[in-house]
Length: 170
Length: 170
Image (cartoon, rainbow over all chains, first blue to last red; front, side, top):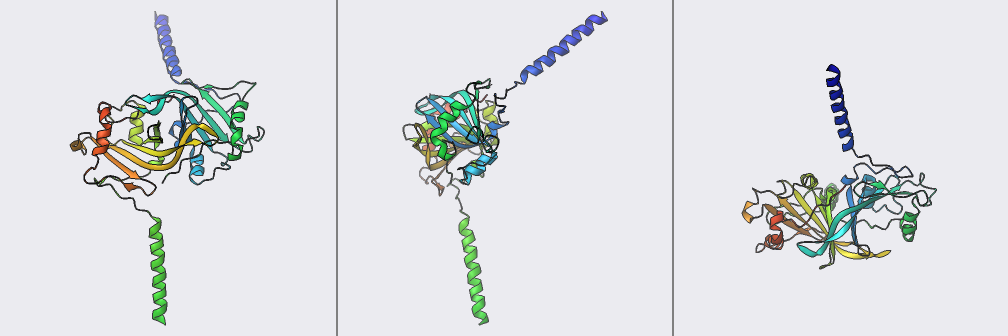
């Protein structure tokens, strides 16, 4: 009888631990070892855009180093340590103002990490990463780790590989 | 001679003071006494939108109380103390990706201040204010202090007077 109660108690504790563990969703690093930046949701805003070609709204954020650089026009090149984040959403028309196109479902978050030494070998001085969907699954396989990012950004090589122009505030 | 040097010294000091004062641009409160919130440029982002009807890009920010409310879906009503800020820019096509519509010149910043007691009399529980252009001139005259704001927002009275739906992040 004592054994039975101990067994139930242990099962119950194990179940609680398992429940607690399942609350913490582990977000994997990408194949290159780049991690989703902590607290990127609290970063300040650099710009926003509406991609009418693929019907998405994008909000571009920066870590503290990126914000300082963007506000002092030190963005060509961006300083080492700067990280730019782009939050991508499907677009929708605001129900109460249909000519306002606004974010709908979250699609992915993508990041550029400036480190001219660490990322010298890919020719850009930036690390490139994307996490897909609400589950934030790292994007990219061994055949195309970040080449598709770099190919797409090649037209802005002369802007230190960055499309976004930071907004100018008063 | 001594008088002359003192006079030159005083002129020089006065000129320095005048120069220093002109560096600090005073931003006036609006007619209702509402002030441009300090450090709104460092607030976190709530959403963004593209108004295709007037060719503008908008970035919507919130103070800490607003961000906490938006992330916990406590937005109908928004809590007292919440301030929403909307930064409005003329739109432009990204030079290197013309189907990306992005912010160009800054147009104005507008704010909604939730205080259900203080702003009871205007029927909304919000204070309304806008500062125009890079000089941040308060908008509104005695004949139409905030009635145009309220009229325009009346279709979303049932959403506590707010058009913006906060983005849902992972």
